[in-house]
Length: 137
Image 1 (spheres, one colour):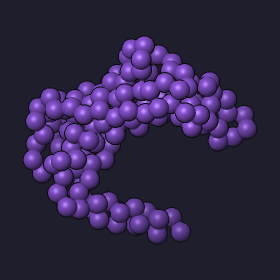
Image 2 (cartoon, rainbow, N blue to C red):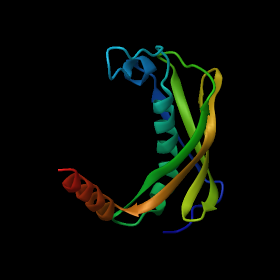
Image 3 (spheres, rainbow, N blue to C red):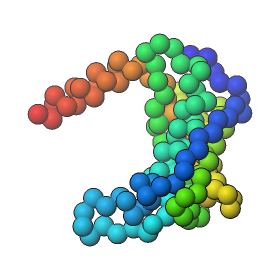
Image 4 (spheres, rainbow, N blue to C red):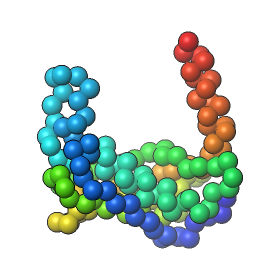
């Protein structure tokens, strides 16, 4: 795995539909959230942008996975807007790739923070997941 170019960046865009709203995250009848872009969807978009920075550097049987996220969601985005997440590679933090991440809609920034990713073997990751499933039975 090569080191990405310092300050390399990538983006990911998402048109906010009903599925991306916090109000769609009802796991129980008593769960109630506002009909605005969900923080969890913003984080997913930020992770996607960061993964795109690393994608050209991956070897066969490798992928990047999120390790940690430290973000603030500072503004509400209504349905039918486009949100763009940007990830900028900052360098290594021990064995993890560190990114500055942000998200914005047409009115400006809606969130910002840092995100760490690791590069792992796909087959090793899936084997570990299978062991957890077997152990839970």
